[in-house]
Amino acid sequence: MKLKTTSFLILLLLASNACKETGTTMRSVSGSKYEVLVIMDKQQWDGYSGRAMIEVLDQDTPGLPQEEPALKLIQCNRRDFSDFLKPSRNILLTEISDKYIQPKITYTKNRWAQPQALAVVVAPDEASFIRIMHEQGNNLLEYFVLSERERQMEYNKTSYNAKAKAELEALLGVQVDVPYEMNQWTKKDNFFWATNNHHRKRIDLVVYAYPYTDPNTFTKEYLIAKRDSVMKQHVSGAFDGSYIATETEFDDPVFEEMNINNSYAVMLRGLWKMKNGGSMGGPFYSITRLDEANKRIVTVEGFVFAPGEKKRNPIRLMEAVVHSTKLPLEINQLDEVYVTAKKTAITDQQTDQQTH
Image (cartoon, rainbow, N blue to C red; front, side, top):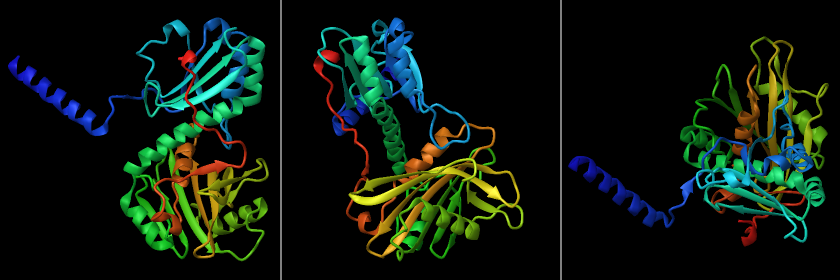
């Protein structure tokens, strides 16, 4: 008993010192990735309000060859939202009451745990709740998806393949948090390819650069053509003459403009297939930017091969990896990578006291 008590006191002292060093006693979040705890009474959940919300938040993940929901929603009645559930990683708190004048969505982080994402939706009546879901629901979905990306990026900073990251920087002068499980890589002139070579859920990262000579570089057609040219040259399949190509016959890749660290960038998301032999395929995600210091274009792409397996989480992982990229001018100047879509950005706001 004395030994147990002494051990407990030591652990308590260590915990106390850790709290003093970090300056916080906030709990860590619980729950699975892309899981959202929705605080909404069952009657509303089963009614028109719930349907309007589920219609938005239960959308399929874009860019996958099969249907997979972007989020997993878990319903919880307001009376059951106890302290035990408050550390959930993603929480959507809803309330429909005539004490509110107009519908509103507010966002905040780390309310009851960290790193936690909380959104609060309030409305005076069901009709206005449904209306705000139709008008701002996609922003709500994006908030939770981007919060998961931020968590993944923070984790990747502490769990990456240091040797592969160093090899990439030595070759191309850019930094990427290469996942630690990517233990195989190939280097060529202006081309880097890393993979975990897993037989069930394979993830691959490619980074390549080329001179900026054409003002039409940042177009969907140009980037697809360049991608296919680079992949054909460097990423071959198991059969002679086979190579990775962009699927354009049965799928239309998504092209989106964005700002990264206040500079122009474009995203390309879609499906890839193996041409001239083999039946491989899967999703890919790439970001292309202008490296002004070296007057060149840099593309960083992640792609996934997971036959018979769900692919949402692996491609989301690769999205986080791609967005960790720092170009030469940013390596010594930036601690964080800032991404802002061309569409309306979501900002964190403290929720009103009356909604807590």
